[in-house]
Length: 114
Ligand code: DGP
Image 1 (tube, rainbow, N blue to C red):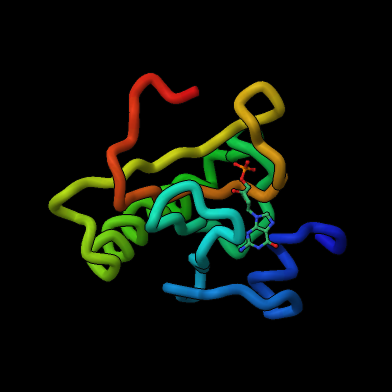
Image 2: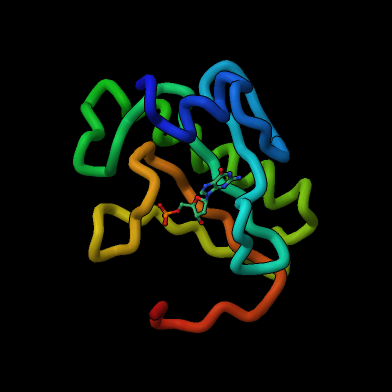
């Protein structure tokens, strides 16, 4: 997608603080962190929202969770705990329409979320 911010980040056209990447996905620190650790994990492939996930995307969606586990260990938050969040569309607060998983950690995270 030409105008997609996260497509540009994954192609290296916009700088980001990358913490993990492989052939299928890339993870970088959120520009507006909501916790001491706040990483966004995205597939390289453009998928706009959870509503747009196809059956053929199941493998890459699973890889987002595997990457989250690796990044949590890298960040030293595996044992204390972390939260994985995927916002879908406006009422959930999605602002960037390239699917992404938030990994939040480093403070007590209240429940229910706001
Ligand atoms: P969401 O609200 O779920 O769509 O989350 C989008 C997140 O993307 C939000 O927490 C801020 C982050 N973000 C927006 N623009 C940039 C950017 O240019 N660089 C980085 N690293 N993060 C961004």
